[in-house]
Length: 406
Image 1 (cartoon, rainbow, N blue to C red):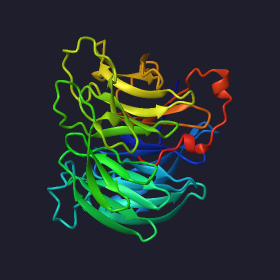
Image 2: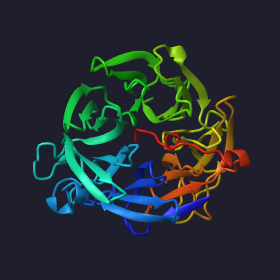
Image 3: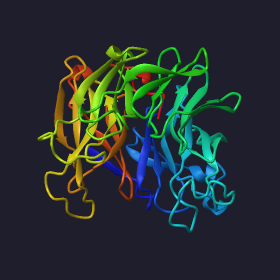
């Protein structure tokens, strides 16, 4: 295991979006949520050179630097994707105030044209040429919570915050179509099936599908699993990945005591949704719990075909020191054949203990990368599983490591 610290970004505090590029490099959106006027920054981990490279000041690139006086273009929130040609698509999100201010609410400045958030700004970037191809405001006044790419039709699907609208953007026509509000609790992902239909869910975990043929939203009679003491509220999609054969979606919701699920892609019955149980087995089942203490994210399939992810639990020892947290993060892997889980232990780098992993990717060699949240400066974690010689030598196409949602 190895940790890479973005020491050139002194105040950036979260990484919500990280993707594998078609060039076998890892692209990271470093965000700054807590200081007014700061913008998100695109960072590349160069797998050949084994180092971080600082690519693009996103706020400046989309024409919204701190000097505008508007709410900051401070982050990319599960909204950065690479296509098969290596072109990056990213949409901005909100949370930090304008430069010089200490508090921000999107409602507080909704009608203030001078200080309000301009909107979700799309940036389209060629990392090979290190060139911004174009930018666009794809949704006014609101941030983009999650983004997905239909690479065949050149369509981006997104979710807005704070009003929680579902929309799609035609890249060729540079036109946004708003499909309306889907609930109060923002899902954290949109995913696609083989036909190009897009999926997310409502406040109680019910799947919502955008039918690509009819161009309408449909409610499916399929619900995301949850703990038995819950009623489904807030079981919104958090992190999902396709199985290597693209038959299933594996995922977790954004709520306390999240259960891992497996969904047969394209299924319309509850029997197409399997509850694989708690992400990490609790010690008693009766301990105090909340979203942060049991947070689970960073789902990624290793080169060995196992599903890896990071799951939180309350720290076993009283946290002390500069980077102390109430929670610790354990690396877990799941065997898709037997559905058995193995707790591989706590992620730890010397005295530094991660506590919140948002997303994960892997490279062609099978190395896993996990994105960190909540530390200054920000960092990513590289984990190389102990693969067998046969797995190490297995040749794969780049599509096996890429996913087309943030």
